[in-house]
Amino acid sequence: MQAAELQQTSPDSPGTLIAELETIQRDLQQCVSETDIDLASIHPDFQHSARNLLQYLALRRRDLRPLQAQLTQLGLSSLGRSESHVLATIEAVLWTLRKLADQADAQGLPATTGAAFATGSRLLREHSERLLGQTPDGAGSHIMVTMPTEAADNYELVQELLRSGMTCMRINCAHDGPGLWSRMIDNLRRAEQRLGRRCRISMDLAGPKLRTGPMCPGPAVLKIRPRRDVRGRVVSPATLWLFDAAERPQAPVPADHQLAADRAWLDRLRTGDEVTLLDARDAKRRLAVIERAPGGCLLECNKTVYLSEDTRLRHRRHRDKGASTTVGGIIGKESALRLCPGDELMLIAEDLPGRSAVLDEQGRVLQPATISCTLPEIIRQVKQGEEVWFDDGRIGGLVEQAAPGGLTIRITHALAAGSKLGADKGINFPGSELQLPALTAKDRDDLKFAARHADIVALSFANNVADVSALIEQLREYGNQQAGIVLKIETLAGFRNLPAMLLRAMCMPSCGVMIARGDLAVEMGFARLAEVQEEILWLSEAAHVPVIWATQVLENLAKHGAPTRAEITDAAMGRRAECASLNKGPYIVEAVKTLDDILRRMQGHQVKKGSMLRELQVAGHAFADR
Image (cartoon, rainbow, N blue to C red; front, side, top):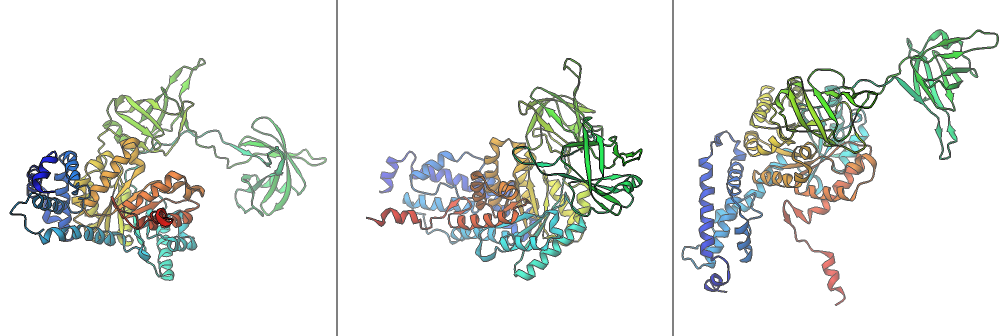
């Protein structure tokens, strides 16, 4: 079809499309000079990437959907895969349109345009390898694994993780400490030498943890019960080791429970003796002494017993008046609030244990439930009408009153029968403008260790350019100007400020982005998470920086040994990132093996947003019998 015919059949002529694309081209060429970003501060290896990111932002300032539809009708690129080479894509489409329009000035496609397509992909690959290292055996993606505490003393676990596909060891600085971290790293280095593989070390700074404060302890009662079968018959009795508190000797065999008792009273007991008591429910119970050992006795019982610290254990022999004692070491479980829709909750600044609502005899609330928070300074920053979410979005409410001493919250989201809220649960204020620096005093202290031992430092709750600058300056102060930095995007502010934070991070030799989907889902709303994570992937690809796909990847498999169908699909989506991150769990080795298999299989089908058209066996089967 000639150009004249094309003009008659298409909604807009190539000339009109050319004019629109030329306007876009000029905008992209001018946007770099118009920005106030100091490109001279960008690391030399990121100069091209910074320009491409700015051009991508300039491109996405307009609604391109009408233009995309018309380009598609002509069989041309719809600009939907332009992230890593924005200007080159516009130039290539323009050249094709000019050829269709038989414009005299449509010369050959500039060599620089063709080279730019390859440059974008090459830079993303190089930046990924600089941050995360090379993938072993041709694997397409990296696998990051969070270390459990046991990795400090379980070399076999670390070795098996490395053998199964782990390429990056993640140490969460919110847990454990330098001593345990050092032993984890030593185990990794030993495993690397044995297996001939390399693995990067990423250390996540804890950041400002906004969590619920402590709760009032519940009653100090210990429940001791035998194991029973489905018919309720005792399969094995419950065992209790009573020991001298001064010596604290070990039980001769593992016991279900251990408590301290008076030494003189313990010395009276003999194997075969009987100990009687009225338990915390005033139920009569008998315990049999089955074994004596220096400094203690092992007892067993065939009925359930509730022990408290004022329960008296009695021992009596023939012609003996008997003696009694109490036990020590019973710790009450921390209580939790039960909150229902419509309930009132006070989030207080004062450092007091949380407590349930006080009710009158008719069940009317005299005093609402209260709980404190770990960062009381945020109380003054929250306004009336703003949302608050607890425990990863399981409980939500609206701030009805805001005062310096506390927030009055009306619960709007909870189970009808009530949801439990305990201590150390996360708090999110999605719509509030909280002024919390990403680096805490603890983070700065932990960074001393990370600056010496980590390949990557991940900045939790990265919200603005100042946060990124603080991390870079602190690393330089500790003498490390080469560490890769990862921006963990887990708040609304972090998402909005991601382009500016990326440009600041590009001052370092390597950087990346982690989509921390847990907090991010609460902050953005679960319905928006899919949309937001797509935008983060696009922005990161435009900046040629690698992305880490994190939070609940194969979580059921890692924790319970069996994956859900949904999380298998989610893990496959991780192929659009350069790295997928797994959390710890009893079945973490199996999770690493499964994820490695999924990512290798998807490598032939997916690269970023693009589908790879490898041969499909099912296509061959369709014609096999014809």
